[in-house]
Length: 167
Image 1 (tube, rainbow, N blue to C red):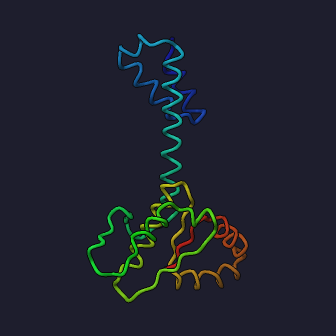
Image 2 (tube, helix red, strand yellow):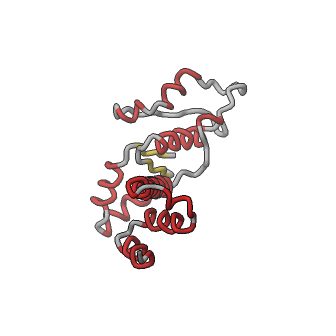
Image 3 (tube, one colour):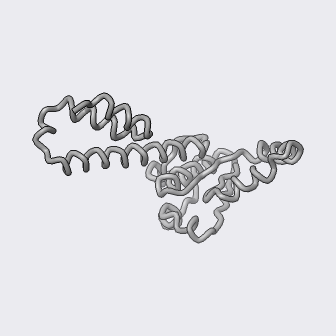
């Protein structure tokens, strides 16, 4: 069997996960003992995993979250007035599915940005699209977008976003 043309064809079809898995199968002799269906199943599984990873990476890059925060890292020992039960409910992301809003208020330095990024990461992990914007930057961008004709496209992209974080 000619492996290089098959691998090249997989790459031409943009099946990079399958191409990489095929190369690995050729290197390891124990994969030769598997049946055709088992080997094909491994190739398809690798492609599915690679595509899922690329989607997650793309969504995280598009989210533009300022901090790498997670809800699991919240320290409830500090007296910041955080309601554990409320944060547990927010971590389920049901509020996003129901199209509810969350407003985080508090004094400077209390961790509002960190908490919003943690909620954004949780939503991202749950499969929702997330975009984080600084409000002053957005307010500057909107008139410029109107001026150069990007306003409808900008508003449509913001409207498609499941979680819009304005900081």
